[in-house]
Amino acid sequence: MLTLTRLSDWDRRLARVVNQHRSTPGEWGVSDCLLTVMDAVVAVTGFDPAEDIRGGKYSTAAGATKILRRRGLADVEAALASLFPPISPLMAQRGDAGVVRRDGVLSCGFICDRGFAVKDERGLSFLPQTEIKSAFKVG
Image (cartoon, rainbow, N blue to C red):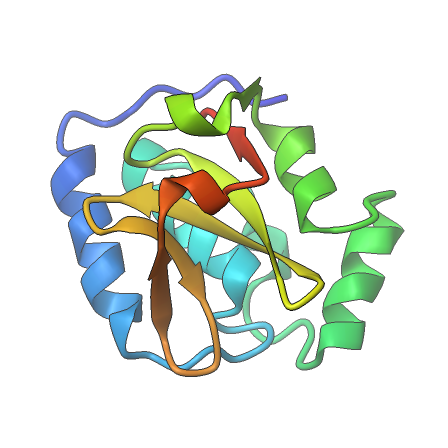
């Protein structure tokens, strides 16, 4: 598990991530839900836990699953749990990460000033914090 601290300007940096991803369509290996959360983690802490999987190392859902399984992780929830300490979803604050179940599929996202941001095909969707299944403290 990582021990990270928040940068002094993390809130402004996180707002830039939201603006960048708001209308950028989701793309496996470029701006999917996990990499978008990792962009938020970089904004908040300056550290990129996904540095080794960026740059088009996968381009499909199956490719993403294969990378997770090679690391002994079943899904995005397990990936976040391997990096960050769990917290109650209702205690999550801006910059923290979490997981929701949408249409039977786990998706990860992060808390921002607009709610819980989750990447999809069109960009970011903003969900109420009460929909978060599990949450993790970032920094």
